[in-house]
Amino acid sequence: TLVTFLSFYSSPINQDWIRGRFSTWKKQRGDEVQLTNIQDAEAFLSPFWSPFTGNFWSVDYLDKVAALLPSSHNGNYYVWNPGCGSGHESYSTAVTIKKAMPSVNLKIIAHDSDLIRISTAPGLSVDQGIVKPPYEQFLTEGARGMQFSKEIKDSILFEYHDITHDNTLPKLDLVVMRDTLSYLAPESQGRTFELLDEVMKPGSLLILGVNEQPINPGAWDRIEKDGVVAYKKK
Image (cartoon, rainbow, N blue to C red; front, side, top):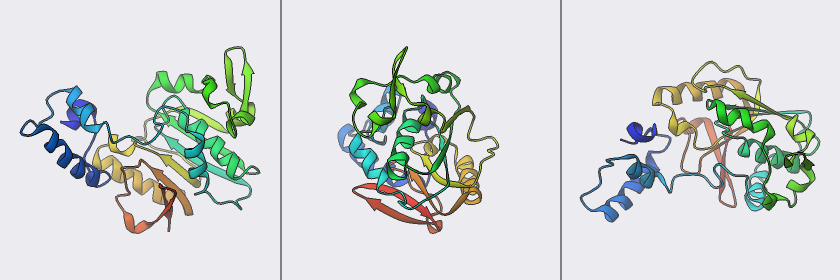
């Protein structure tokens, strides 16, 4: 019923969380454990999402992700951010990388299959609440309020694209794919990890949702800094 109501798939990527969540759900609901409508499904999944989904990352979260990144990288740095939505995660990722590695030539390939959301991402306005270091150095006042600077905008390529279709990508240094894989059917999840094996460089990093894990754990080293987890490709 998670698939029926929300196109969310139970798979090895998230089954540890689903088992734990079901135990809690059963205690809360007694015999009424079946998900009978979309509201039930949303309630069941409400603790699943990663921090700041659909919003700009907090400075604290940004700093924790930055601590996972290499500090000595030079030259080009390629990132893939599928399921980028309206762009909040892509912009947050760009600022994070510029904070950790200010001299790299950054290029983020940001994909989403929602045409309306991806079309608004390049002109996304910024809430005044994030005007603080390190965000503020990458913001500028425009005709429609605060927006990201040309330096940040030029580093992100927003494209309408379905992750289940063919993906033409450069060799990647980082993949940010939080809470995206759980919305793919298991066979598409498998093909995505085959793609990651092809296009990610040895030592590159994969950031999944906080309640997701790779389906091929032997291909990755798990690293953690202050509660934020990434997977380094072997």
